[in-house]
Length: 123
Image 1 (tube, one colour):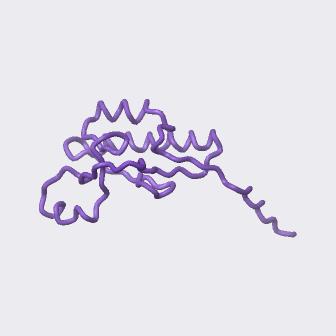
Image 2 (cartoon, rainbow, N blue to C red; image 1 turned 90 degrees about the vertical axis):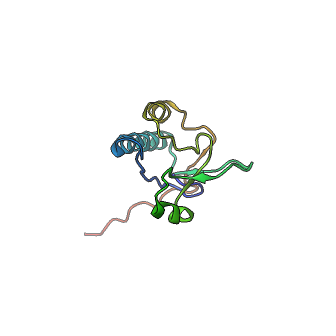
Image 3 (cartoon, rainbow, N blue to C red; image 1 turned 45 degrees about the vertical axis):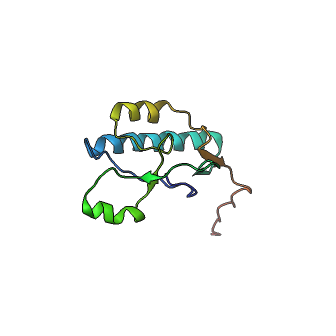
């Protein structure tokens, strides 16, 4: 997810192991998050960085020339959770499945006004 961007999740697999291992963990986490939002009546989830400054690091730990040239355009990460992207399946497995969703990094909200009733056509 990207800070200050509501309801958006993207997948980026491991660079040191099977790409799909992390993608599956992320997909299951997003499903867990969507179920949680549905159960609590939330319609929006926005990751918010803490008020204090946190160090920004490249989001990808690759040193290829084409990656290094694009670093300014790629997502960033921090040096600590939940803003850190790990390259460790066991650590990610525990974090994605067991970490609390309301940890202060995600801001949830409900609609401020009821959704309009669906239009019915006259027959």
